[in-house]
Image 1: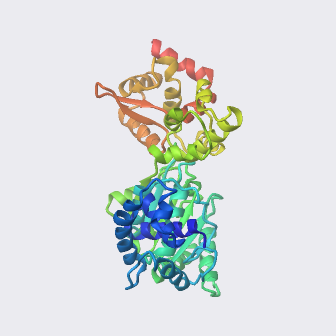
Image 2 (image 1 turned 90 degrees about the vertical axis):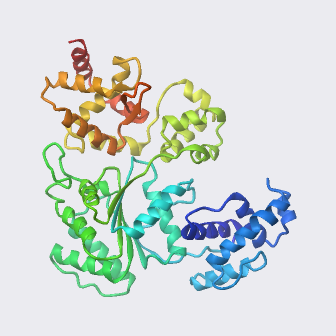
Length: 469
């Protein structure tokens, strides 16, 4: 096995047991042990001195790995390779050039997480949630890393964890009806056990059979791109799933309320309000919002792309709010069209959008989409704020006044607040607090760019007239 693969395997094992990743110096010690190198030899090519590695790092590391890998035997520099290879044999993967795979993932393939940056607090929190709750909704904007986060956790847990007996990954981006999804899940489970499946006709009986499987064994089930199941018209329908998909509401409620030790994870660009309500009632369900990368974790993405003007990288991270997919996209275009110079790109004061981000906003803005008329009004108004106000953030009180004037006071303050909360839950608006302790509202640059491109002149003129009145 390649030494980098060894370090990755041990890194995953340490995270699964301790909730933290290996430090750089610890990885260096593991490399030395695996390659049977003296600490002095490896210290010559790394930014750590011999004494630090041998006396400070190694002793604590061997104690840590003894608890994780030792199985009653003390792990040392000389014993590490043999002990790990024996662990690999126990996992059934043999001594080969492949890393141990552990439990199989049933269904679709996990997203590629070979380039996974940071997220240690989120990983720790998510691990705790999936082992304690029956349903977890991962919410965040397109490209933020929801699927990568749960995929990385599964990659770690399938090798090192005993919490689950199996893992299921199923994309629901095609908006399957509940009977279709249940049939697919039951077939996957039957095939994994080499069992013949006698599928019942009714949706209720299929659901009961699926719940029995969740009770028999402890599964972690991921339904990826679950926003595709939210088909209700939020202007007219209180049911977030719509008529055609209404039975999903009862299905998820049963997952949360029935007794079992499995967990169903939904990744979604939109919140599941029914799951949030059950959470507030003390049921074993949680929503977790995934935010952008910050600090050195975000800068690592740009570092791998060979960009220049490192002092400007922070500006790029701020504009794209640490969204990993957006940073990958803009870094590639800066490399291709600006010779890798971030400073040259920033001089053009333009904002680029990923196809995924634009497609998501287009779906939301469709006439039968997932935004209410009032939410669209607020977004469009905030997008035009720089042409109406001297800054790109406007006070909440000013927004309240302008919206009420436009709607001739037919709107209540409660309706506007609820609309703002819904937009915040969808990561479409941002809030700041001024020096005067006043709430200011603004948009992310990518959201502002999209809305400005799709805003009619008549709408802008309407708000200008309201401001002048």
